[in-house]
Length: 525
Image 1: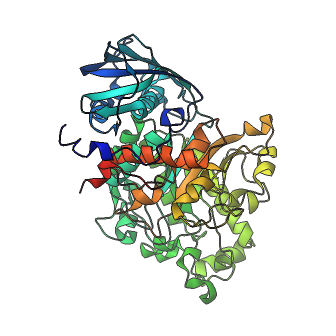
Image 2 (image 1 turned 90 degrees about the vertical axis):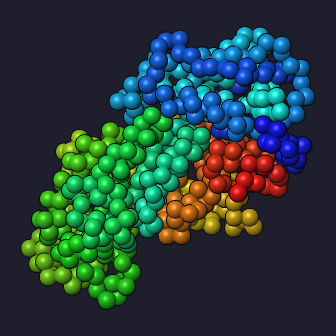
Image 3 (image 1 turned 180 degrees about the horizontal axis):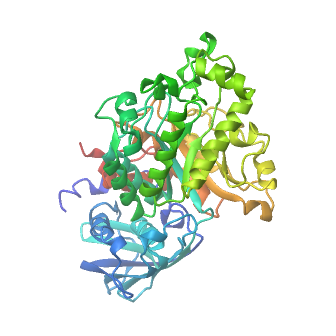
């Protein structure tokens, strides 16, 4: 402990600014006092309504965080003589089988000026988990140990949007199981509750489930860069106890060049004009073998993924790669059916959406499923707007449930077309903070907005630096998705996120700051 504080007086962040006790995302209801409460060195966790298996992992995790990864601070307020001896977590349900998009994530956190107990109440273990994350941001530390300032504290919180997703791309660069788990740990802090996993693309197919094992061995970058079924099940279980639903994406029928590395009849060979860009190569509508395999894939998805949704892509179709295909079976298919490029797109959409729904899952697709079908895609599909959102309101009015990814692209220097390029690249944080999926919609129309997603496409990120590329910038989107607060003081927010990033450094996560300052945990080599 003394070594930890050898540089203690240097650890106060330059220009530190306290807003809502620096809790991020900002809670829905919060009241703070002016008393400091210290923790008893032997504080414990108790469950008044019975133990919760889903949170067994969380107790040692947060106990360690509270004691070793809190922000250094000099006590400057009145200190209560009564230490905090326990954290009481009252939960109505610890059932991970009920983790779906409608699960109750609300929580309440109460710390009085005299009681030795920190009280957490929640209907589900997910709400309790978010309460622990909020509590972690309220704890500071000095040479004596951890303490909480600004007691009494009353926080009552719940999400603004129920679908708060992050998309990671394992097809452009392989991400290890351990790195995905690290990202999911930070997702809990950020309140992201859906891990949208992009598992196939033109460059590679790392998906090694039983139905795809041979494809993966032919189309993955390396035999080391394949997710076995047990790997995927491990990640799914890791997410379940952290309140994170895992949604797989098989990107069809475009972006399919890699499928041809397994069987050239699985793809339609583009004409020379389009062939050099392998992202253009689509699937072959005439391949019964391909269709049978995809049917098996979605059936296996239902076995592996408890979440009730599967993403099927359908973005960026290159119609000419069908109508001018060099693949004879595709030419024969067109002659037989009389379908043009858009017709083949709709043929695939009908096939894929039926496969997904027949397997018991709800299909999600990128915005083209609405735009390229003139709004005739099955209403059971969820439309995710990405490169455009001009149809967003129209799709709602036609009866679709929608997600917004437009304006949240982490790989873009200008994620919002209405904004200019920032001098500091990390300031795209403010772009994400300024995009509102509910903007311009009536109360009734807002009911059709499930939420939003922040995608990290993988062309220029890999296992080494994905954490620092995504965070802290993604905290901007997490606040938009979670908090009712939609206007922020830019200067104050910089220091709030600096604090949060420093806390994450203390947990061992390599993310950078938003502004000048000092973090003792960042000095660790």
